[in-house]
Image 1 (tube, rainbow, N blue to C red):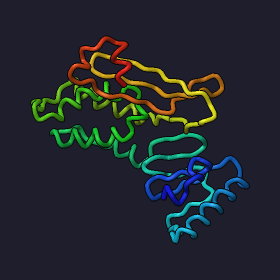
Image 2: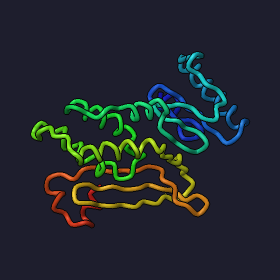
Image 3: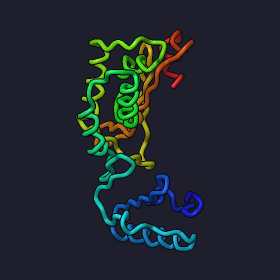
Image 4: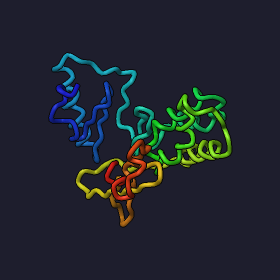
Length: 209
C-alpha cells in the first residue's frame, strides 16, 4: 500500500494498515485527492469495499479513535469498556486493564508513573496484593481517560514544543503545538525507568526518554 500511494501519503492522505483516510480543508481539494487515490487503486488492481467506505465525514472512527476537526479522541466504545472494567482480582485481569488503557497512553500525561503500582503487579516475582495504592492507580487511570482527553492532530507547518519530566521511577514528555496562544498536546510519552536508570540524576533521566 505504501508503494501504491507513494508521493501522496501526507498530502491529504494517510494509510493505517489497510485503511485509507483522506483529509482536506475544502471540498474541491477533497475530490481531487479522492480521485487520485481511486485512480491509484484501479491502476494497482485493488478495490475499496463500498460497505466500509465513508465519504465526506466530519469525524470518523479509525483504529479505536475518533478523528476529525483537527482533533483525536478515544472511541466511545473503548471509553465504555474502561468505565465498566471491574476491579482486577488477579494478575491476568491487571494485564488486561493495562492493555486497554495502555493503548491510549499517549492521551494520558505521566501514564507510566500513574500506572506503576499496577505494572509492578504484572511481575510473577511480586505477590498479588491489591491495596489502596493499587486501587488509587486503577481509579486514576480510569478518570484520566473518562474525562475524554483531546489531542491535536499534528500540523507540520507549525512549530513543535517538547517538555520533559522525570520522577523517581518514570520519565515522561509532552509534544505540543501552539494554537491561539495556548499549548495543545499532540501526544504524551512516558515509560518506566529500569536498572541503572533508576540511579541517574534528573537531567540524565530526562535525556533517557
